[in-house]
Each structure stands twice: as C-alpha cells, then as structure tokens.
Length: 630
Image 1 (cartoon, rainbow, N blue to C red):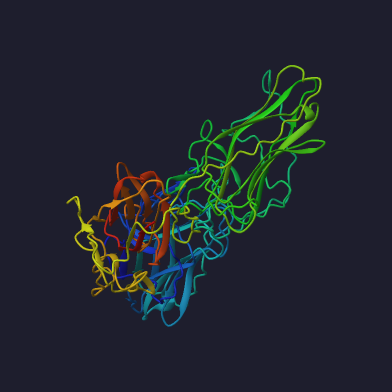
Image 2 (cartoon, helix red, strand yellow; image 1 turned 90 degrees about the vertical axis):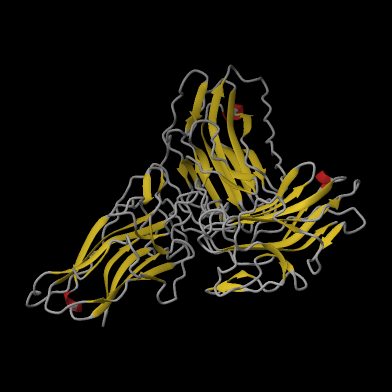
C-alpha cells in the first residue's frame, strides 16, 4: 500500500487549490453526508463506501433536493503529494458516483486527474438529459507511467452550463503496488462510466436560483402525440382528473413554450414561502399530486418558479355529449411577489371548434398568496364536440416571482341545457395583499404614506439613547454581542462579512465591532444576542411607519437556525423582519426596510432586535442603523 484514504481522518486534501473555483454551493468537503432524493431517485447517498466519511459535494440535505448541490460552476480538491516508487506495477483505485436530474448537460461533469510531470485525466463522467441515480461505482487504472514521480490527485466536479441538479462523491482512494510492471507498459484508456438511468415518474426541472433565478435549458418536445379521447367514467361524470395517476397531459404541446424553469408538471409539490407569505403550497386540493409550475422548493423561494416566459400543458381529448348541461370545474391558484405585472398570468382555455378562455388571472404589483380557489363554468357551447383543455402560465415581463397550480379538474353533465344558454363571464380573482419585509436583493415595497407631522423616534447611534443589551437576561452568545460601536471591517476571499462603513455617521448597532486576527474572531458564537430600544410612545390618529437599514451576512456554513429578527413589542409582539441563514455566501450590504406600525397606534412600544448563531458554529454577522419611526 503506497497511499490510502477512506476519509475517516483528515489527511490534508486542499479545496480550491488553484484559487479559481467558481461554485457557490456544493463545494467538495470531507464530511458525513446527508441523503437527498426526489420521487424515489437518490441524488446524494447518506451511506459512504466505508466508515462514516467521504469526499462529497456539499454534505447537507437542506430543505429540498437542490439546496446544497453544485451551483455556479467548478469545485475542485487536491490530495497531498504522493511519492510513487519505481520498478513496481502501480494501480489507482477508488469508489465514486456522479448523480444528476434530467436538466443536466455535458457541461456538467466529474473528473479525476493525476498530476505529475504530466497531467492525465483518468476518469471523466459527463452529465446528460436523464436521471442518473447516486450509486457507488468501482474504478481502477494503472499509474505505471508515473512510476518514480511525486504526484497528486485533482478531483473536479461542475455544474457547468445553466443551473442543473448535480451531486458527486469519492471514497476509498488507494494506490497499491504489485511486483514489476510489464516489459512494455500500455497506457490505460480513460473509461467513461455510463450513468445509471432511472425511469422517471414525473419530470421536475429544478434550477437553484434567487429572485430572479438563473434560467435552465429544457428540452422541447419535437413530436406532440395526439391524446386518446377519454371515455365517460360514470353517469354524470364526463371527465375527471385529480392527478393521482397520469392520464396523458402533454407539456408544451405546440412546441412554442419559452419558460426555462417552472414548467408544468404532475407532481407532489414542495412548499415555498417568504416572510410568512406562501407562494407554493405543499398541500394539494386532494390526494398528493396536482399540476404545478415546478414542484421543487429549492434553496430560496424563487429557485424553481416560472421564469423567461410561457409554460403550457394540455389535457387528453375529451368527448362531450350532446343534449346535456355541461359544467367544467377545478381548483387553482396563481401566486406572485410584488414584482409581478399584468404580463404574468394563469389562463385556462377550452379548445374545440372554437377556443374560449374560461379563466384568466393576471399578476399585479402586490403580494398574492397561494390559496386554493374554486372555479366553475358552463361548457354548453361545446356540447357534442371533442375538446381539450389548455392551461398556460407565464412570467411574461421582466423576471417576477410567479407560481401556479391546478387540481381536481372535472366535467360533469346534468340533464338538458337551458333553452338559451348564456355564457358565464370569466372571473378574475383578486390577489391577497400581505405586508412582507423586503429581503436582500429584492425590490423594496412602497412604504405606507406618513400622515403625521414628523419623526416620533430617530436613532442613528451617534449618541447613546439607552438601548439595553440582553434585556431578558437569557442571551447565550459568548462573542459577537450587540454593541453601539464604530465597526471594523472583516472579509474573507473577497467577501465582506462586517462593514467598516455605517449607513450614516460613524456608529451603528453591530454584533461584535472588532475585526480580530481572523474573520471569525468576533462574530456571533454560542447562540442568541439581543438588544432592546428605549420605550417609544406612539400617537393615535396618524399613519405610522418604522424604517431602518440592516444587514445579515454569513458564510456557507450557516443554516436556518441562524437569523436576524426585529420585533415590535407593545400590547402584542410582532416580528416585522426575519432573515434566516442558508448554506451560501451572504455578503454584508446595507438594505432598506420599512413597515407600517398603524396596529400599534396609541401604545408605548419598544423594538427588540435579536441575532443568533443558532445551530452548529457558523460565521454570522449583523448590523442595524438609522432607525426611524414617523
């Protein structure tokens, strides 16, 4: 045995050895991996080839299958130097897998290179547009051509094109020797392992992104099969689909869809929400499946919503009887963030000898929460025809956060139609407005107009107005406690985690103002730190607005247990801002926030600001400045 590593101990592998990696999540780690799967297909194994540890691209499972996979490009890791003897036959062996969803391409890959006086790629496996399930695979090759050299192994994996779901792992690396090599050694050709295809039960198309997300290339069907007319199921029911089984709906039937994420699927949906507003429901109208625009949740609320235009789906053909009164009914929702416009929509059309849009709901510049809504309309005008339903949804303008779903579609008959049927007008349900704090990199909601005469409370922290640290005496943080201070800046690899510039003046509220000897010397550690304002008497008869500037920054070891929260405490307590950590790099940038305090008019309130490194140790910093109530 010349070299062996089962990754149970740290033998000195180096991540991003050339300093040129671009991946933002899913970087190589020696770790005890958590498993991920979707619809019965495993993408990251929670069992290693041996022991408890392996090399893996982002070990955490997260809230959905794509939370911590490789995103943003290349991740690489190199072994320590390995001195190879002469006069012996040398063999490199290891176990590995590359797993991906159907949105993968040949730009996605796993490569293993041997670097000595020359560089040889001994393994390359490329992505492809099918399901490749995670399964440990054996690999071995000769290293005789490197005999007598000091070499190292370089392992690279990439989500190299548009966003794809890609995971990789390596375990049980060994280099062995066995007697002299053959007299005339023949270089071993590099094998290209064939991915393991897993027949899909449905077709998710995830693309890990923020708002707006990164587009994902999606194959367009070239042939549109003609669906078989559906037989009448039982007396009174002409057609019924609760989407628990596949009845032959066709995505992109005309081949003209432009959406790159959030395409229609029959799926078991994962829920998404932001600041208490739900944009995709994880409960269907009945059963476990519905038609939904991109079923996965992803790492952020906008990872898999509709982007870049239209997605459409059509039903099988449906033969409608003559001489009966016919009713189409279904449940649906269209949800969107306040960056939506009237170019965003959900439409349901009935296509027979003519085409009628029976439902159209348009986006608008407010918060429309996902909630199942009942719809029904007469189909008497189509009696005696063979029709199909065409459902369309679009993010039609500049990038917006848009989700849609449909469930429990039915067409029923009941006796003869009225002598003179009157078409029912298409209802356009109104959106549900919700006050929501503004997240980082998200358009800022318009603040509530202030009707009062001027500021009620203002603190730029240039002087001490009497804020109290750890007011309840229950804080657990051991470093990074809130202070009114002139902060020193911290950064790592070009990413700033604590700003040395305040929003105004020289002072702010900050979690540990000092920089220290390393980026993590004075960040929050050990749990919660809190600080409360002095009491503030709010007047009655005025429109009241709270505003401030803030940031929460963290390294990619953060989790949703890490947070920044701002609460208003009066006769009741309301959390007006909550931002959670996540497994990516969140840089310190001052962000504006505002919200109405009208519900607290006439009360004496105080502000309670909390920040925490709440799980295992993470790098977390936070700051607040320019607090104003007017």
